[in-house]
Length: 84
Image (tube, rainbow, N blue to C red; front, side):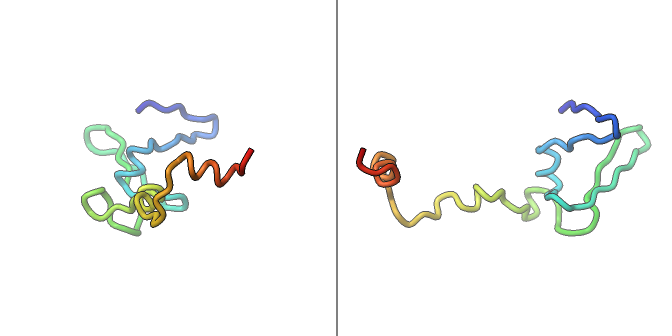
């Protein structure tokens, strides 16, 4: 998961890491360096971390399968586009 640091010293935290830590915009993170010289990222306060500990599902996954109306794609497209 390589990333590039900006001139201001900013980097993007990869999605895989954000998901593992249950990070959302506005969350605080803390960086440290362990005795092996590896950088460690911790979420500051807030919810439990990790998918196995009740991580928040993304908004699309939470909505998937909730529709009560069973539309066929062709029927829905005809309804939305009108009779042309």
